[in-house]
Image (cartoon, rainbow, N blue to C red; front, side):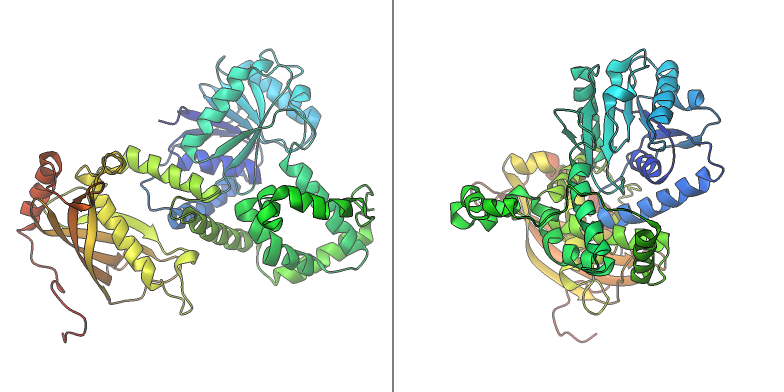
Length: 496
């Protein structure tokens, strides 16, 4: 499915733990070697955060979680692995030694990626017997949520290795970008280093505090960068005349003596203490893990917002998420985990995302409709109305909906929906969905829908083909033995 059946992770810190979580949640078995005495606890906490984030990120059916195994030796961990990810501390001598050890023990065709944020792959592969399979795979923290990986080859890295690495990232929800030439710090960290150096000078010179500087980023251009990057943002800044006008207008200011980018700030004890103290004040008592969870919740909300961008087609990282979900549905979304047509079908399981919460702290109204719509989509996939069916020109359209709000769904709450087919004929499909609290079983909302089978090109209702109709008819006949759910046929304002 993914091209990676088994991964090995050498090093289980912040980045290594993120890689482990990314692989596991993609259904890939992972063997880990990390001599740190608390490696198991650290990796376990990263995985727990990743699972919480994924529960909010997507309702698509994730594959069964991969098997995690901690190994006593590096050789044991890399044996039989398809992809080996090295994430040890950023020291050339250490990384070079570890990679050479991996090279000697790994399967001949295994891919070997290094998580280095700046060391050159040519330097890393110097002592390897098979240097052609070594490349830099530089991710961004948290690896389990941020999809980008900079792929950088060294002088001896083969083109086939680069191609294989890029191909294996998409099925696990990541986007590989090939950096054409190896330079220290690659592309992302080059940009971050420039901003970081200028930021340190601003704090050093008491221009602002660390919190003010962070506010300048997160309340302004950081929001633009999240969805359009740098050059596309400035293209818009050029107005109708575009990028050429922007460069002509603002290009001369590049020569002004504003920046200290070429000057290195002295990170003496006083500056370190100033930054540390201000950072502690900014954290306001929140622990490291609490800040991680807040970060993840916010990233999930941003990714989901981008998924709905560009008229629902998705934009930027949201488009990548949308494509990843479609592949998950195609692989595992045809049948619910516990398909039993003799009772309402349990089709969607998710958690209330930060992006779904309104000013009352509850799931906002249109998100109920979204979950119920996802439930209808899951039923349609079950009967054969999948993406290929829709692209061929036929589908079911919802023509009438009645939602009842009976309880409160709150941030982080685990919820699931069921579907009962009330009736069907060649053109119509009558369904009743129920949204429940997964932990207590409490009914939070219900929705009654009428759908019509349509020829989308002709723009009119048409009979469903036998292959689809027979499947949904069989479910309807099984559901006919069930009691009618409470609330069927109600209208707005009707007394109980």
